[in-house]
Image (cartoon, rainbow, N blue to C red; front, side, top):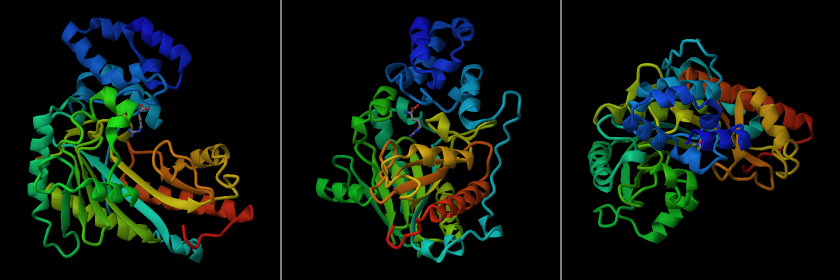
Length: 367
Ligand code: DAR
């Protein structure tokens, strides 16, 4: 195995698993722990083009294998070795007005989404669950959703894709919800998640809670046990974040404890999502900065300098729209608070928009 990892490291230097593989540490482990760590590495071993190249299988993997995983995590999250990782939480987003229309009235109808990943501490992480555990977790979460059904803000319905579930929807509704960018796509075609076991037993134990207003969603059984999200069109990031926090608190009160690490905060399958476990994003039309959507490289480097990541509006690994429509989001998840993430998104969007307008852009009526 060490020689295979050395080969991956030479051919794919950005694979953080290969870059930071510690063979002395690996050899010091007993065979059972070596086997368990190789399960964490499975996706990165089978997919050398991986970015992180690892998914945790159990919440305590992060603490059990800290010697190996910590350097990878610090590299991705740009936290220097030796710097204490003190994950704090600050949802006091009302302290800073972040309405995009204050940047420019043309940014008053922007598609925005913020989500957090959470995993129940009473189950293995998705990569190590069996079919019965996936169904059992879904049933526990459905009971929690029942406490929201009559709520004015969060009332809604649960849509399951588990065959035989009393909440099961048909293929037509599933496809419609995926097309509406609400439900997650069929995971069984994702080579990274397949090897990691995260897409195992598809579609059992999977589904989505959606509020009546369709502005609060909870994915069940995707890359994490739960992906809790708020979405809206508009400019008011404060309202978006406040709704997510309200829904998260409601669920936290009726679910088993979420998995956390004393060092890394909220525990997620992928180490790239640790900490706040939050991805906040908005869609912007930047045709000048993307050469009409044809080239994201220049924008990606501009955005990186602002602490932002850029991808197509169709999700991870998607291209920009012909009108230059892209998804921008703060890269940092670990060591930053929820409030800080909101501020970085707002400030970064303002700077990119300023560059777009200066380059002759500025059309944003129907993004
Ligand atoms: N296949 C993983 C993706 C890492 C980030 N994206 C996530 N977690 N959806 C890799 O290591 O490349």
